[in-house]
View 1 (tube, rainbow, N blue to C red):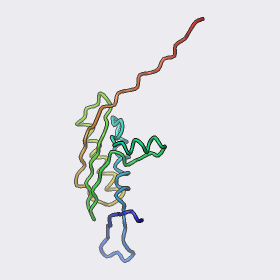
View 2: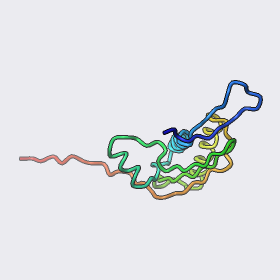
View 3: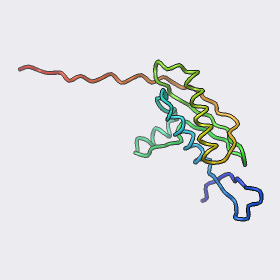
Length: 133
């Protein structure tokens, strides 16, 4: 069973066509989003949670893409770190994702929608108790 990919064709190219799967664009978007400081993670559903429990890292978790022949639209579902300014973070994520997809695939990114799904709090530091006998 062949995965469905979208075709990008260069005019005048006699070498053939280039196909980029939607999953590839999703992975690029997910990695570019998590590069931004202040993003605690991506918000996925129960399916991606199960995949991670089984030891498979899902780099496209929390990403939905629509890829046409020459354009792409991206929806990102983020968990942000507590204390960050969300509008600034969202803008930085939008710019980084757009730049990464356009650079790596040649697609024109028409929109990057950021959906903040939650806030991640820092893990409390575990202190070891010292018992004196």
